[in-house]
Image (cartoon, rainbow, N blue to C red; front, side, top):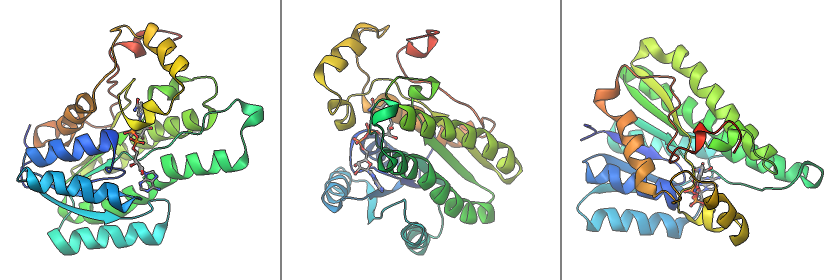
Length: 249
Ligand SMILES: NC(=O)c1ccc[n+]([C@@H]2O[C@H](COP(=O)([O-])OP(=O)(O)OC[C@H]3O[C@@H](n4cnc5c(N)ncnc54)[C@H](O)[C@@H]3O)[C@@H](O)[C@H]2O)c1
């Protein structure tokens, strides 16, 4: 799975799945751009990659802000001359039943999880079209299939799946692939923010009985990002230890 020398930007890579993906990509020789909204997290990840002998630069940017996003991609192209891989990873949750859900809960989740994906993808594709090469990987969630208390989150991730499939068709002749990875239960700070009782119950209905690791997702992202995956586009590959098999779980 070759990504050596490729320039990869991973949104929200100061933590969790994004951090694991940034480190795993750097280990395989990619030039990694670590984006997050929190500078300390960026510094930590860039530091870890550099200490391990990899190449990384950090860019603090709120990806819900169009001007921030434009500046971020300009900095990447100024530094490396191109952008080969975009991983739309940053995501947040504000779980509540419908009647408790506020307009703010709706807007912030849709802004980070979906509007930002549009903004980042539009900027990336501006450069990828010129290169006739690009790999876009969207980190969705099994929750898009439906989950009580996650109307805003599920809608944002469902939108991401539709966005993936549509852009795969729009960009297929440009050498740009667009694929989607919905993780199941993955051990990250986001997972740890779920109340303990709910986490216990979720693990009880997990086919493997175990929680996944950030590198389970990272390896799948690297597969889609690799030169070898050039004929695969518009696909949704669950990495969830079998949980997506259930009709209702
Ligand atoms: N952990 C899981 O079990 C799980 C399951 C399904 C889907 N996912 C999805 O995987 C992705 C990563 O999740 P995680 O568990 O690693 O989360 P995480 O909370 O560990 O990391 C998310 C990162 O995104 C950053 N971020 C938030 N808003 C931002 C913004 N506006 N601009 C830039 N960065 C921003 C945060 O600061 C944080 O560092 C998310 O899209 C999430 O929905 C995670």
